Length: 557
Image (cartoon, rainbow, N blue to C red; front, side, top):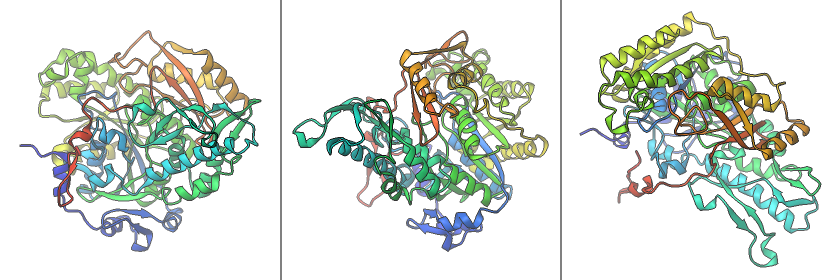
């Protein structure tokens, strides 16, 4: 019987984190220990490495996710281990998982099989408390805002124009639309409110994008929480909230160090932003990783149309990062699913369906090439894949100027990623990256949204709801028209309709809402029926999670 991911993880023998750190020339003084197997990197440590040359930055992304699974994090982890097998100094720079999905649909997010980061249970649960700190800072600001309105409202905040939302790191659909302040006069002003999941909060984005404490405080202070009766923005600085929020986030700013099953160092820090899982590892962790290793493997959330686009157009643009190569993950199963095969029938060879569905991969290759970064395609291997199917995909990629390698990391760990690692090394040696973002800062916000929709999604154009149009005008008038755009869109399709698989054509993107994250310094465009507070499924993963009498957690995937 095949072992589950958690059984593999629990059987692993972990090294003390000091020994893992030594691979990166870190000493015990550089670490702030959280038990035996987790540590944070101190501020002094980050300063000590700051003048080191940068290593190579490799982004792992994927085709649009399907129920068949793609294995993006698994590939990232296995690739890091494979570089270790080849004697290369490598480090992973990954995102922290959110509690909500762990107890909802996913059941965990630490890779899979023999390509996992450990301690897996800690990572999927409280880890080092970063997300709790973000939640607390977010809700402190909400409390100070409502208290200001209650205590005389000197700033003249219009309760109908409060835009700051409370958050919690759990899928809880009943919190999407609520009323606060019910009760006696002393219980606050009655107004409508709603929660977002912590990972979709602006504080999360700010933590991910801030360079240091000075930059963090600058960004926190700029957060727009509400507007006055005469339409002026009210910020966290106006509420005198910035210092207290920064105090709560002081330790959360420090990158976390853990290890893979094969003891490759992994800096796991920060998480998704804007729409739950579109984001990437924090700027701070990625920059630290680049100073400490020759090769840095990082990933961005969901398909390349979302995660990779944000990585390039927001993170790299803002942080001055220059990626050297991109790994695009696909599976034969997922491509056949895009070609119309039902999930139950994916194990059968079906070249016709593969040919129909591979257009999704084709579009992602084209998109990534628009950024000027060399692309390597990898197929995450399944036992049901046939030689004919694999060969077809390989030939398809080569015809489009991409290197190709099979990945068998789920089954074999680092050994199963050696072919891919070698292909990446060849690419780094022979192909130069000419990275450039998709659009210029000077372009109008509307044109930026149109550019992403046409170039990345393949849309004919964009339809803006009247309220979205008005908000774009207001944001521009406030002097934020040069911000990049953070698109919130379904991950399941290149379009904003989750049911349109493959490579949709002749569609338009519908932008129903726009708002500015002034501290994160991007503008969020919400398309289709996207939500920032997910719900739990009929049978949540939580139903199968338990802990034994001797403290062993079971049921995490």
